[in-house]
Length: 236
Image 1 (spheres, rainbow, N blue to C red):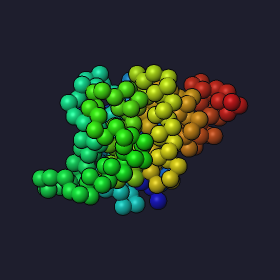
Image 2: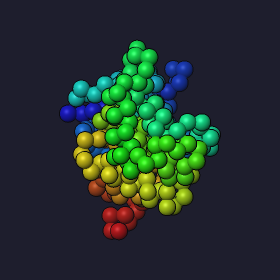
Image 3: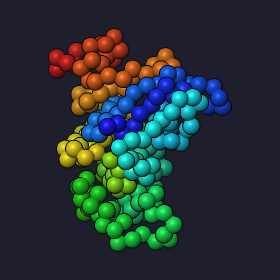
Image 4: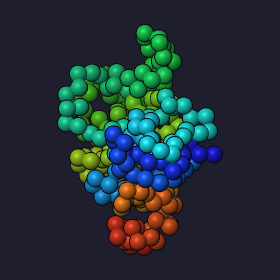
């Protein structure tokens, strides 16, 4: 059963579509790489999948019991985040806000889930460190733990390796692989690091010309778009 489905969706702003006729379904356990030229509408599509942007027409649905607070989101990195005045554990714990409801304080379960997320990402030993003192790679792991802290079955990641140095980029992909190895998390990731992202992906969502091409990895590589962006990857 699909976790996220777009059915004939048109997405845009002030009634003016950026994307039209968007049709695809993401299933449990899929790893979807979202790619396309700058300005093609990738961010618009992500906002729609997060339900932060209402379709002009058509619909975007969550299925298989997926609730809005079960979606973890890691936005694009910003330089300002490095000076965020909080400890690493506090940052991860804030990922529980959506599931806290009207409770004014974090529960014992919230704290346990945050600690488990940090252990899963290998950053539990950094829990008492100031977020701003961490390296770029460590911060991304902490933020990924925060996204995972929603207990979400779906992670939506927007350019998570942009601006990271090569070593931090490798560490991030290793962390993501560790998460996916359990088979209980679906990942949708926007990336300009197309060759690396597609090499691990099960599906590719290529945004272009006001629409999308959704295909499994093999069919994308065989398509004109795949040959243009990453021709020869299938032979690597």
